Length: 522
Image (tube, rainbow, N blue to C red):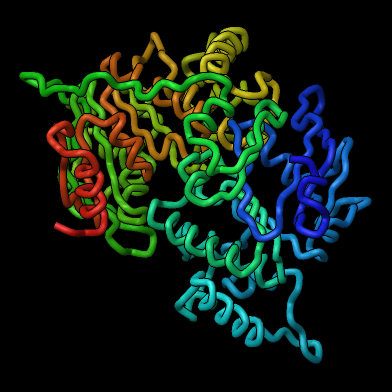
């Protein structure tokens, strides 16, 4: 659809012939877009397709090499964040732009503080936020605005980001991967808010890779592939399968699993956890007497609403945190008191849920990130064998289609999904000196597109076939059902249910059962 098809009177945001390059990489190639006022318009594509780059250019976060931007039909000569905010455009970024040590109200007014007689006055701003939060369902508890952001759940922090742009009067909202770190229940809450905003006349640009969300919320969708527009269509005139094909340029495999692991006799138990109890930093009990075992070649899925002990379980398994009580054994050896590096020597690998905080050195190159945690593997006579590292890193980046395919690229410059591929590639790489025996995988496909999910799932299935025991912690129930042999459900730090032999359940019954357990229902 061209800008003239909609007309200036109904267009909220648009651009024409936008180009953006980063060195030799063309992130956006001759993109034209027109978004109708009062609609939800999804912009989708694989990780590295140019979605976020385009939105940052339209918002004014970085300059365009070529092209023009329009807001409410007005040509913006020099796009900038100030020009966008002035015209009531707000952007909510994938990685939150909040200060953890400040309160919610202080974060919202930061840069636009209400001052009277030289004194900071937050009460008026807080009252406006309370009214806004109640009207849109973003915050029903007034006490939220006095809490420090560092104390909030991920879902609450996401709402604060939206409140921040709405407080400044935004009527055009750009949401960059807003559900990447949310649980299914938090996604439902967020979408209810977005529907209310649309009813109030707001325009929402939804940058995502999750096709079910596009089909359930968006009025229109634009598909980018390798920096170019390959499809623009009304959602009512397409399907998730057609959109997936447009995103990756091929048909996707429906599932990587053909059979489930059956109990072997006697089973070779690789990971055994006994009565594990872990406390959070505030002293509360995160895990309370958790026990399970995982056999060689088996995947145990862990389901639960975020905040019920999943993060603490992953950290305990990896050796990053020490439990208060209980035992962890790998291949029969007690590793409860062993740190990360010692567990890695026993063949444990760990994919963290926070790729920025624990998975990557963001200011290091892709090649150097492939060295993290496996330095001993590449050390020769006290020096790193750079040639061997380069060969392995190239092999893994090609296998997972990391974009751009440049080992010298700084990790920070990669899209979130491509950063995740680097972590997966490093952790799941085969090592002749120390075979992978146990894999702890926490949110392995968070913020990743459908094509990359297919590759990551194939990698997890590969190490399973090689005999690894895999602990798979995921907020994506479909992912757990696709990959797991058994699923346990965590609720308030305890295992409240275990499900296996999935074929015995009728269509939809298994999901309903897991969902009920996630909410604490017996």
